[in-house]
Length: 91
Image (cartoon, rainbow, N blue to C red; front, side, top):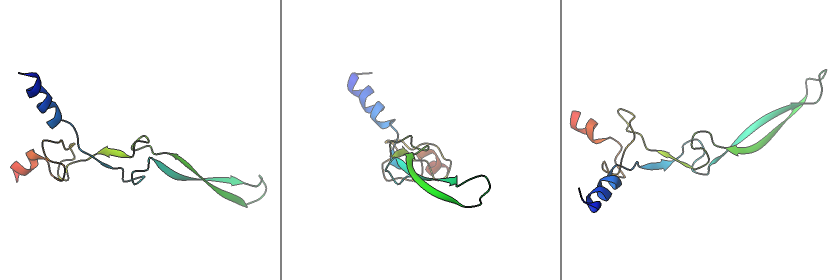
């Protein structure tokens, strides 16, 4: 196949991304840590810090899954589609 044909097929097989639901696209999540005042006291303090989101690894985007089968949607399926081509054909 020609270079242009391979390029178009490669574009169609690229996954569609969406904002990460855990961090809302920021790449960081707020994590609470607890620190006690001492071993004999039941009082402590809660501290919060920002850490890298584990779901998107700090990118802020994750692959958009199919609502039916959970497979990753590609550009060949369309950007605004929520169900992959195979699941649409089965319905």
